[in-house]
Length: 295
Length: 327
Image (tube, rainbow over the protein chains, first blue to last red):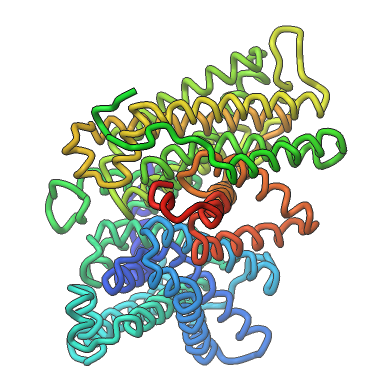
């Protein structure tokens, strides 16, 4: 039986990683709400964010803040590219749902392999944004990076809510999510809104990747797990609002780090996927929506 | 034969000339490889195995119109079942194959029963998660699966003292098994059950109104797909003689879907043609390793966008216009 200190420490770690899952989950929701598409390649944006930031940091010697911003913009550009080159043609041809899901999976594989070819397959990391730490509260250690994750996460969720509620474009996106035909009739350029949603969700994923890389490592293959866990978080949150997705992410992160304490690190994905199956089967519209009848 | 479920002017799908031509071309390739020998024998053997896998996938994906991104889970059960039973317990390969198929079938039944109530993205994600869980278990449960080390020295297929060691003979046997699998799938497709499945893919509500028990039909299709996948996994283990978790990893999903889409989802001969074409093409271009994965992904994306119906559907171009609706 693990000690209380271990449990609290794992709780802290779980909240940190859970916030990242939450950010990825919001990315899922943004695209899903605008288009009804679940972009299974979401994790790739997380990976690209970390990889680009590392490359800009080490190869070009840019300061961390500049590389973080640049990397986010670059990844958003890739999100737009994916939308224009692949998703939009399928969307216009009214491709079936499963074909689009499959396409996003293929995009994930494609981008991962291209990253191996261009940036190499070695895992890499870079120092935390603020040196020093960790902060010690009794026997519990909290890395400074966790505060960056917390701060940036809160900032981004706040900015997103403002964007969706206050700006014209955000409202147009919400209109698309409610009824695309009606939105189009009201003069909202739906396809352009889809591009915006992909850029937004890619940027969110990239930010998550940039924030988490210092506490662990990044490599071509980290996208898959982040994507899956982000999706699970989105399901727990019910694919609705950004705060719900964030809470879903924290919930998942805490469960996962608890599983690491109890069963060992190898089983964290198995536990997460089991949580997914349980939520899908018994709470198909999320934990916060109460028990629903069907999916 | 009349059917209460569906009235169709063409109850049994006959192969048109174009499909026959494609099949003939496949058979010719098969014969050429058999004569030519060498490395291509192995490629063709794998094509046969993938063909069996895709036949099952086609059942669930093509005819029933559902998505399973986790069929590699059942191939994994089949492969490891064969490996463990043969290497650890010295079972007969044929017996091990059938036993693993039994395990995979039961697993499909148990997993499918709750999972298949889901639809759309949820079903896709749940099945995808299934494949990932199986992959993780095959990596982590080292006492059973030997982790990344994998199993080596799996005996080749055979009955009693009669084992198939020669590469050419192996290919012939696999070809025969693929034909058997194809025959079963063709018979099932045209049965009352198969027509029910296709009705579900057309419209679930419509099919339900015609008295088709949707959930039971879907479950049976899922189990059949699982059995095919398990058989393919076992055959892979016996043919190559070595398995590791990577063999049944997430790449397998992309590779098999590429094959299915190249051949044509939901067509009779699509899985077989797709498996042969998609296996041989990379060899022609001599692209290896990473480029091969990139090529698969690119081809799949292009097919999804521009030719979602695949090679077999090209026949429609040569057909008189009035037939098109029924094809």
